[in-house]
Amino acid sequence: MGHREDLLAGAKKCLYERGYAQTTARDIVAASGTNLASIGYHFGSKEALLNAALMEVLTDLGRSLDAAVAGGDRGDHAGGLGETWRLVRESFAEHQPIWVAGIGAYVQSQYSPDLRDLLAPIVRGILGQLAEEVPGADEKSAKAIASIQLALLTGLVLQWVVDPDHALTGPELAEGLRALTGPTG
Image 1 (cartoon, rainbow, N blue to C red):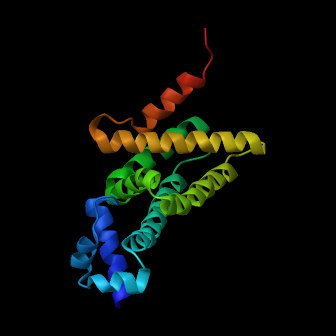
Image 2 (image 1 turned 90 degrees about the horizontal axis):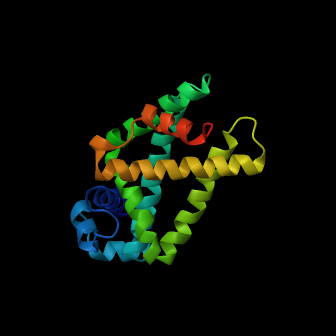
Image 3 (image 1 turned 60 degrees about the horizontal axis):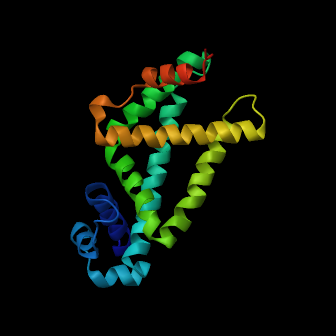
């Protein structure tokens, strides 16, 4: 590997171990076996390097999520929903560093316009992909359902990061949705 690839690998390692906001240029250099000047030469700044590494991390996260969602049985919507969310929740444990790094980056984007500009199209892309997978819904309804799914996902990730033993399971989430959307009165 060259310095550029070493820096990306080191930055990814730091994202997993330290998070976006806590990673310093010196941390990346130590993890990559390169030098401080390499960051400027190859990426221009530590933030640009972390953003490039974050794109790789989020690509990995997308693959993890796609694999989890693909495993859900869509034949029985109610049962499939619980199964899909069970698989998504399992991916939290299997890919914990990726999920935590992603959440940390989204929080950090509030303080970095460059990072926010990088993440906004990713979020729109996720929403578009989720909306395409909603069977039989018009565009407005599909967008609304996709937004709710993304809100559920981020909320469940936050619950799991803070208190994994008490975060909702897939079937509990499906039951909660049925109770929330079921008949009232």
